[in-house]
Image (cartoon, rainbow, N blue to C red; front, side, top):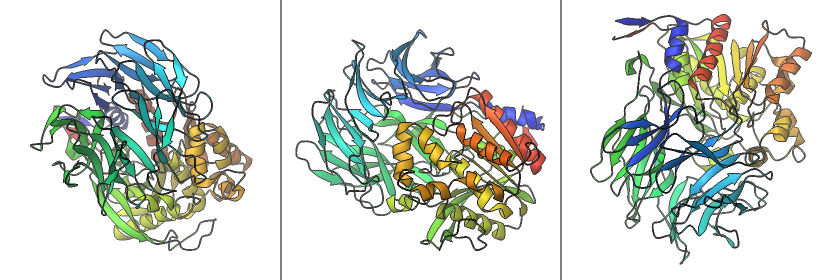
Length: 629
């Protein structure tokens, strides 16, 4: 028997659990490319579907951080990947072949992102913020020439190529309503462009896939509130919706027969793959255990098999091949657990609470009348410690949600003796457009009240939780929530950790990337010129005088989504209040890192910083992990 008892060793073992990312099937269906860091560093690996043999192609040529996806070349002999500078997300596009040779393909200013690669072997559709806003470009792989296709004031994204590579379908918004998103079809030279006019104004529609015949589009739309799937006939302009009034659903791809489509169904905190029969309109769910299943970037192996990953709160992600005729599946890459087993990880209980956005013991400096009441869902991870301190861990996005998947950060916190509460506050996904739009024009409002309401509920319901040891920790928009909770509800928290979070909304508007400015800041809050009051009122930096517990500010210096200025502005405000670093607050800038990282060394650095702060400010009680040799 072996024991992992030392905190440092425990964190190292957790940080070095190998992670598989962005699996994608080759054009012939024989191979799967994916990122994998089983060597200690993220590298590109290729799996033979039939033999199961795995080959490593790269040798430190691909990014350390596996944030961005990979794509096969049309001939299946090479793989395209995104490469940035130390996590700054200002990507260029590279290609690597089996011999490990990597070469630059597209080098442009700003952020560059692959949208689609043509079956003709020459057409590469990319998005780029080179000229300011994110627009679409056609890069000819043979000539090396790049031509701009679109010129919009708001971001154009999600472009997919028709089978003949003469057209693209994509999504953008030209309307006066910032909530709107429409589907367009354009020639790949940009000569002609057509808005398909799908969905209501103010709703969001997006293309997902072209049918094998090039005459139909698989699309999504949320005009009826819940996201739905549909098929649009390009020639007849007929639109067929797959009817569902119970679940939020989203599309993935046509199957090779063109008669069935793949998609996802959101159910509470789970994600379930589905197949719709376009002739009968009937949906069939995949026969998988509960949790979260997700398709690869390219998911189709052949006419009957698809690629996906599956995970639960205690089961790390595994790569599966699923037969849609027999509903049987086979594991292609098993999860690695190191010295741990699934029993060492905490499962998540899904709970719900009614909330009107204003907690019963409301203490916020910004006053609100009660909002509409919603059922708010949350995941509670029990550390097993008695009594147990509690960490509130709001998700980022804010357009996202926490699900029943393996979450390494949650398990790290549990291993340190903390129970963890993740709240799907109003504004989260999986519940429809109206629920998402509750957060428009109201950052720092009802969604923060939802967080407090459900926190108070679990503290009341579970006497094994210590209400004197409550901490808030979040990253990105979760970092904004951490700052906001600390300055608006100071009596609730013994400490807080704000990681890559927003503090000054006007500065965020001015310094973030152009597509985040329009698709996040303007869409949710308008501009600082239009709505100066909300930018002022909902910026945590303006309430530092309310701070009544130690706070840890941690931020990557190369972050271009939420720039480092956000942390520095808050730090300056703390200094102006004559608060002392180390005594009243702690501050750490992470070099060679942007908006978080999947790199093992960089994850470990963050884990160590969190554990050290929590141990000194609250007290940790790391688990003694016992494992078989």
